[in-house]
Image (cartoon, rainbow, N blue to C red; front, top):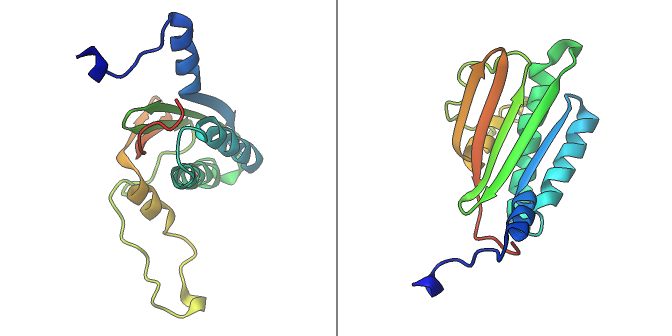
Length: 164
């Protein structure tokens, strides 16, 4: 029976090392340059544990969410801070993002339809694809507004750990 169980680290030091590797947390200003830095750092943290395709999905979803916060939650030039936490577990990457900008508009969590694309190039919509991608690539998407703070959480399903 013991042979069937996953091997656990040999000592407490190994446990701490594994926990540090499997958790990412960063607070950064709500501006494009800081978002790019957080994206690079978050993908780099898990790059050896997930496939290139999974890393691409992580970067795409985080870029959509974080850029939406910069563009919409802090619209009008107001300054703010974004907090990003990611935890690697057996079922994927659990992500939590918080900010103290304006509330998320109603309906964002309703699974959207793709915008109409069977139109002339000049008539293609500028936006509308971001929330579709977020819904399509994530699971357990949830939002809560509490104490003037937005909290968005979701899970990115990924395969078994590669080099944990």
